Length: 456
Image (cartoon, rainbow, N blue to C red; front, side, top):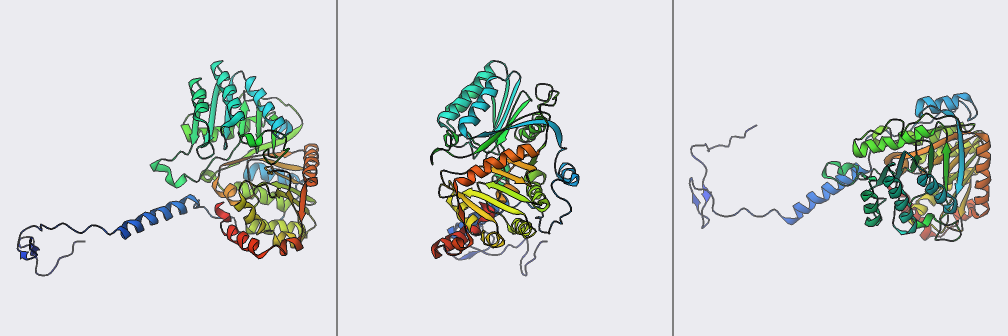
């Protein structure tokens, strides 16, 4: 709407200031307008930054806030039907799984499969840094590409920021298709905080790997000292590998717009074992809280025991309530988290701040002592195992792209509990009294870190 001022008209413009400050009717002003104050520009810039940060930590979706009713146990067919229909892909049978403990077993198995590839390699990972192991992977992937194998590598832009450019160049010159997930662009600034944290390697569409490891020297060795981390990765064969391939393809399409299909990527897969499994994934662009809901349903269904290995354990109020309610109905809950050897100390502090209700309810919480503990696994009632990239925090539940392999196999679960108990023997239990008596400075630090829990 135009505003009409009194005593003015287009034919008789108001007087303007002349060079000496006197009014001269009908003449344009000759003095320059004052510059916009710096404080206004600063305010605008800070406002834009605040909006960008808010967008990066907000998905715009409703949070899961209501209590989830307990309707069945993990051993009940209704549980597997819910997991396979309500949440994820169908549960497939005929699979074989092998747990690989620490880098001395993980990396040789992955590299052996890569070097034996005949048709295709698809590889998605969060961390890919320089150093010795990064060079070995670059060499192996480049060699297979030169041999005619179709090689596709998807790296997170943030997680691969320490990658040696020479390794990237080596792969690209050999014909490897290397792409970065969500590099900064003017049109996707609101998604900069959405990282792919998935860790999936599929060879010839037949052999799959997933778990917690990144491509960096911290994961080499056998967890023998603080410079070599404790972690577990898993080798998989059988029909569920096709689901692992589909999870890779989900983000490959997002990053490139290219659809990989056909026999080279999705061959006919025959039974390789007796285990049932599904490859579960989550993303802010397609249901960011599905991973948390998966965990909540499993916790709610627990009848006897929950064994939780978590490198970044910062549960929200609903998850804490679900765990404490499980304890109150007789479920034994044991949790292993990192101890003093922690790569992100703020996360450890935020985690410790939230242990009160769990310890009061009777949860057993342990801190792993020898080195950084990077395992990510939950075992429920010695029947159901979930392994993969997901951390027990809001970043994994709401912000990152994640992928977990859910395994329905009692024998496999029993073997993983044995590994869990071995880790427990190298851990220090934190009692309720010890937690309550920690120094005031630690309490203040942990409380402050906990306030950032949703953004860690």
